[in-house]
Image 1 (cartoon, rainbow, N blue to C red):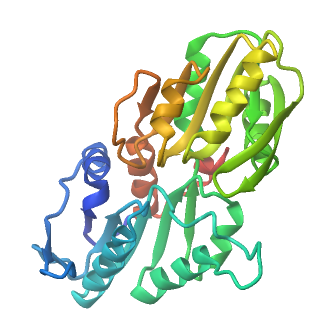
Image 2: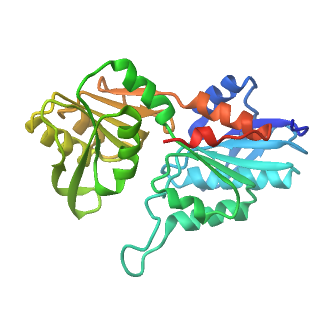
Length: 312
């Protein structure tokens, strides 16, 4: 079954380089948009070409600043008001995903609020990758395609040709993700246990599992301040690990992250281009996810199954 509605790709300003790679991989040109900025900081995105009757894919990661989320919402609204047939929000990185529950009294659930905003703006479908928690999909009343970056990371790991590999989860919450990699690669698994004084500040970290003589790969969905992974790498190297590499889909890399990585025991950090890298580092290698998104968009557009892309 083929879709008769025209398809068009557009991008927010935050994700334009990745959007261009996705459009190129798909075989189309990225649509033209402009953002009118007022003196006080207000913005008004608009399309420079007709989207009437089209299926519109808007690509925008929603990492800070919050203007990235607002720009996406305004672009969705503009497309709906311009009579787009369907609007699909492609969020390679789903920001505010860490706020998925009330972990203290009188706090917000930012991920749920963001889901409500996207649906209220008029989105018909959401496409994203490696959410902080799988249950975030349930916050939406529209279809969510939740993809996994393992499709680019696993082939890279295999090509390294390392023996005595072990997959490590940086905390208890990442055990499911790490276990999926360990099963797929048929190797040992290590779980790190950490305690925090406050958000982004790790007090203590320990390992559960064998690390001596192992080539360790720490698996996580994102790197923020890099405090956890650098402490984990130091602990593992002191425990006899042969090498320590980090695999994280989303390079948030805020605050002292770059400095910590450069001065750490980490041999290599693998990330995707879901978020633009702000600074260069010899230890950071970026793998593109453009081909994955282009292929899934093609299948969604042609009403084909995409279940094979959900394997972690």
